[in-house]
Length: 207
Image (tube, rainbow, N blue to C red):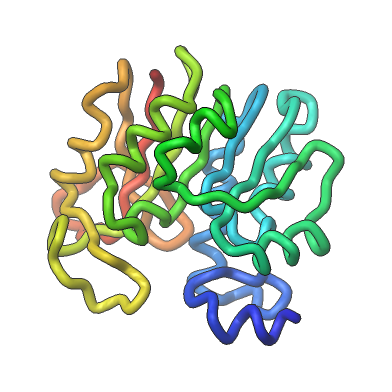
């Protein structure tokens, strides 16, 4: 089952099959640790992958969390998440991040996590509209994305449709009442410095 999953799910992270020092694994885990303080109430992890992140934040914030919904487009991945990262406060289910009816299907959330997802969808503005509709007033969205040449331009990553520029990334959040932009460098997060080139942006947004 796991071997088959690795053969065709591209960038999905399976911690049990990676060395603890794997750079991609450390970056992914770091994003969930970064988001942990924002976890409260009803939570959505959109494109949750194999479920390790859902399980992490549910254990860390078990008092503040009432329910977490982990959604991924791939049924086999959801099957794996249910088997390996089951938790009494987590529900895993299949769903398409750019389904216009997704907000009606899932309802609203106090916190939404979206890590390394927007570069995989053709219509990033529809994706953002879904997230905005699913976030409760006063709720928090934590979203990350790698930077690149820009919307509609080819990338060197086989599983990425496009990668936004830092300017395009910031423009995604104009509707939110408060936005803080951070930059990820390996497992660390910081405000921008002039002498450093950043490849991943992380936005913390309040509706």
